Amino acid sequence: MNIEEYISSGIIESYVLGSLSPGEAAQVESMAVSHPEIQQAIESYQKTLESLADQDAVQPPVQLKSRVMNAIRDEKNKHPQIPGKAITEDNKQNTILLSLNKWKKLAAAAVILLIASIALNGVFIGKYRQYKDRYDLLTSNQQRLFTQNQALQTSLARVQKGMHVLMNPAMKPVVMEGVTAHPGMLATVYWDPQSRHAYLANFNLPAPPSGKAYQLWAIVNGKPVSMGMYNPTNENELVAMANVQPGNVQAFAITLEKQEGSPTPTMSQMYVMGKT
Image 1 (spheres, rainbow, N blue to C red):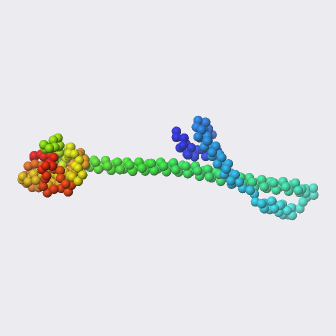
Image 2 (cartoon, rainbow, N blue to C red):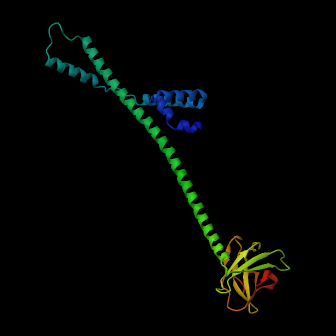
Image 3 (cartoon, rainbow, N blue to C red):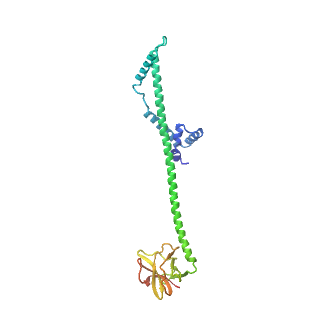
């Protein structure tokens, strides 16, 4: 059990105010024996209540005595004394003391109600903070799950698109292997001779240097034709390239060029090539 959360839950204040059931109060007392910080919290709150009571103590008004005496005289004038029942000075003083005691009791009751109100406010504030923290955590988790779900849906859409391309019987794969200067390199072009659509799948091309990018070429009727730039960010995805121009396609190749591309392939920077 987290002792700090237990103390901040408001149960200590309820215990000191006597608003707990006998079972709950016994549990608090048992916890206080096992955990000195709980006993310290109880004593601290008791001292706080005592301090509040001293600060808010209400003294009876100075003019109260004169008001009480005037009321006694008025009552005496309304009801003449019966012989043998005369009001003595002691009787007057007793009456005044009773009135003063009554006023003190009313003032003490008001102070107790004020203290109880402050304590209950503390309990409610503690509960509010707990529920707000839980709500914020739940909202954060919901946002995180929503973001993850969106990412999964995007990945699923890409996979479905790739599967649609691969399962198309009209698609023709062309494996491009590394040239002599780059042995072991591998990439594949999937293209449809009918629609001329083409997709590039990177197998193990390294990340290009800064300011550079790969350029895909189709050798059409013996001439290289650019099919667009390619930067391998995810080797598990198919990337749509430019449509293959009409004509006889003999091969595909990839060269490393400037990031904005080149009108002609740099033969010394060719990485892979494959014949159709």
